[in-house]
Amino acid sequence: MADSQSVLTVSIVTPDGKVYDNEKATLIVVKTQLGELGIMPNHVPVIASLAVDEARVQSVDGKETDEIAVNGGFVEFSENTATIVADTAEYQADIDVDRAKNAQKRAEARIQEAQQAQDSDALARAEVALRRAINRINVAGK
Image 1 (cartoon, rainbow, N blue to C red):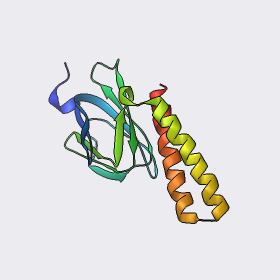
Image 2 (cartoon, rainbow, N blue to C red):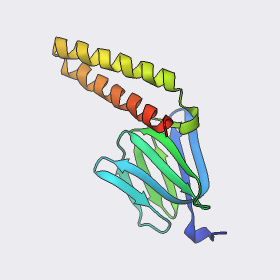
Image 3 (tube, rainbow, N blue to C red):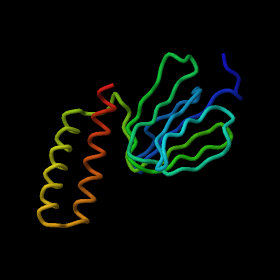
């Protein structure tokens, strides 16, 4: 068994509450606005803004990697505790793929409408919705 200095505590919270909690992780990988960030025990403290992508958490046994669709927010790490505060997040097993595909279709239609109307604000919102839907589909498909 790993000692307390060689494990991470990882929590993912959203405005709706805690989505994920793991007190025995050895690695967390997230996608920040500047690229991918891997955090292992005793990493220097860090705060980073997250992109719409997945968070991967490897458990102590090394056999299991949890994947969580994270939509924006930030990660804060210090004293072997990583906390992700996200706009929304879904554990891989909880993702409704049909719902995500419907969201993808709606976002694609809104992109077409915004392009025709030359509405840059609506286009930006629709593109974010599309990235979120695709992220959920990708994470669920693994």
